[in-house]
Amino acid sequence: MTIRKKILLFSALALGGFLAAVYLLSRFALLKAFARLENDSARETISHMQNGLRNEQSHLEILAVDYGQWDSTYEFMGNRRPSYVRNELSPAALKGIHVNFVVLLDPSGKATVNQNNNDWTLGDDDLRQIAAVQMRAESAGLKAAPLNGILEMKGRIIMLSYHPIVNTQGNRVSRGTLVMGRELDQSVIASLSRWMGYQVWLEPGDSIGDNLPGTLWSDGSNLARTESDSMSLNYVAVRDFSGKTRRFLVERTPRSLFLEGKVEIRYLWSLLMLAGAVFCGALFFFVDEVLVTRVASLSSDVAKVTVSGDLALRLNADGKDELSDLARAVNSMLSAIQKAKSELLQAQESLRFHAEHDALTGVLNRRAIRDVLRKELARCRRDKNTLGIILADLDHFKRINDHYGHAAGDTVLVAAVQRITSMLRSYDSLGRYGGEEFLLIEPGCDLDLAQKLAERIRTAIGDETIDLGEDAIKVSVSLGVTLGTADSDPEFLVALADAALYRAKHNGRDRVEIGLELPEDEPIEMKQ
Image (tube, rainbow, N blue to C red; front, side, top):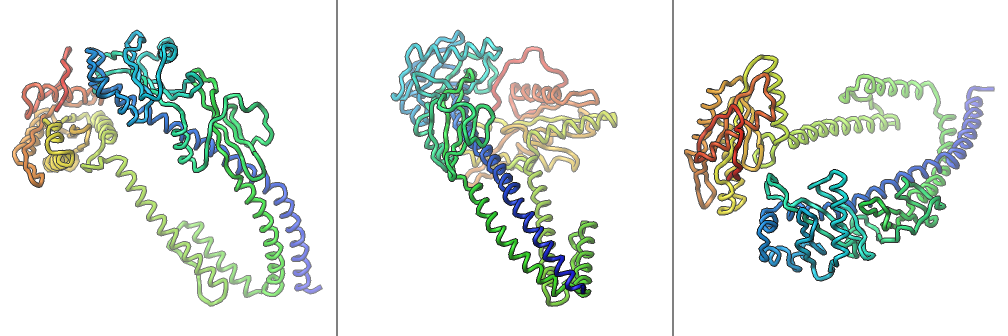
């Protein structure tokens, strides 16, 4: 038997075995694989629905924080002036922020204010039910802690957010608890439907049982199951503060992945049969020494790229046959990968920069400058050196924002950073620590050098006006200076600099103060 006939016979046998194996694989393994993919897709859909529900709750929580940590609310709980309720908690105001009701509880849990948007009226039983949640949380050790969750009241599902009533800076004793409520009504359901891209609805909490037929995925509380060959239902449990399931959020989605998989398997089977026949013919007519040699050469070139990892290498693409086209295509792919790798590295560097720098001023942000402080203190311990710490705060910055606008305030911040930077050494570090606060780290400085640098910064900022377009203003800065050593704690150093900054504010602003220890009893004043 000639070699050609042996090749033909072997090819026919190999093709038959290959097609049989593909049939079995497509019939069992691939269908199961698509089923697993569908399960994963169902789990992701459930997670997406949960995220949508959390987003609605987070929106309510943000509103509760805004109202609960607000000086106006805090002062009302002390003086009980009716104008606050009339102006800030009117039905029109509550409708404007999409809240059904607001309840203010005093420290004993008694409702002092019960305002609604005229669509919902709370009775005494409702108020007791709301207060009971707060009392259970306090008995569990969560006193004056924010709470968020679901409560069923008179057959209606209400999203609640509890927040302690404190002043804006959060440094005074809580005067009670603010409770905001929003019903999980059709407007919220419509918002969730837009979020999901499919219609969702609520069903009773006892509407599904255990071991439902056609279950695709379940974690014990949430599940996805098939409704038909083309559709599936996804259930997300809506549970109250006690963990009891009150409703199910339900979404109907098409089983596109599973159905598409079955169709693709049929196409794959047909394609493989055709490819097998073509393969046999190609193997019979074109397997010769030239082809094998050319393939080996290309394989060697590919191996060089794979082993070395050098994307600048290229395959030999001389010739006009299919292998040459393949080599050129691979070369194009290598060029694309090389370009994509370069762009990826640039993107990673850009992400790293933006993660560590303030978007407005371009200096380090709070997290990054604190990291620099810890690293420099570690270097102090290794080199047995000292470290100058300066905390600077622009004076009366709120007045600039109020009088000239926030755009002018941004211009002032950028100009101040430029003037501070011009005073620094190449290895000094500057970061935006707060709204108008900046933290400076001066390696190798003693207290005298740090104080002199602070005075130069104060002079650089205050001596020249800042151009705001139609106006020009002068801005002063108060600075607190302290000294870090090998034994210093970063948090304590910042506290020392902050105490010195406070004294500079208290003593008239536009000055430099040194702080080497914290005062025992220091009154609290809001910086401006």
